[in-house]
Length: 250
Image (cartoon, rainbow, N blue to C red; front, side, top):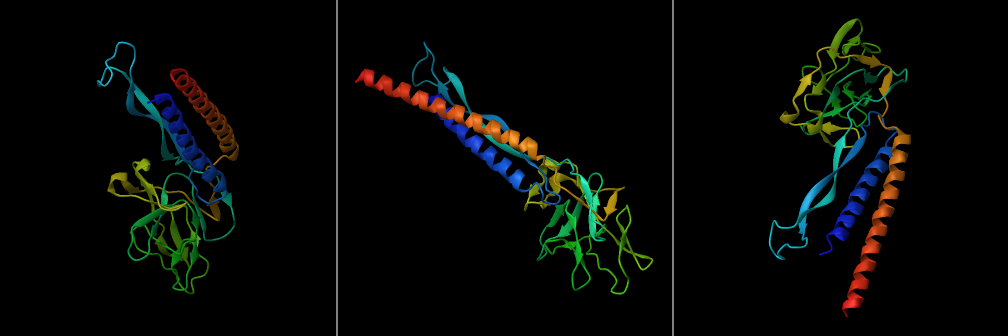
């Protein structure tokens, strides 16, 4: 087996996956609360290359082969908060996620996108229609004649001079264990260690932008294109050498 050719083919596959991630980042750069997806290139062991003196067919006598592998992750650093002057737009200045109740008693979803509204039952809901949960884990219902709500920096909701609830904000101890559900929603099991943020800083009338830097993504696209071209040329060169060797043997 020409292990070098297989290594180059694995590189092309990893580069394609990296390109998919960069493309997603660019197309989602204007999505509220979007967290940039990242790719780390690693090596996966596979096969052996036998050198002079090694016994063909034996194991452990050759040089181990390594194949490029793309590993995905998420950059959880916050984006920049932008003013909207809309009363139900909320942004978190610091760590934490808003808690949303998925439909049909589904799991709790977590998001940094605080573009909220009020449904016909006067419940505070996300842009997807999911109920926003309070600090005690219950849906937040606003007063029908209470006027416009005021959200205090600690997440408390003041309406008609009274506190009607407090927006729940939690932070994982291990962010890498959060799993993306959609472009701006995450879920997490017990291993993520979700805990309530004791002193949150909520900004009313703001939304958090994505943490994507388009210029950086464009630079990555250029690097991917160059690496793809180099690996493709290596495959062609190895193929030509193999063809030339076969011609000499026949």
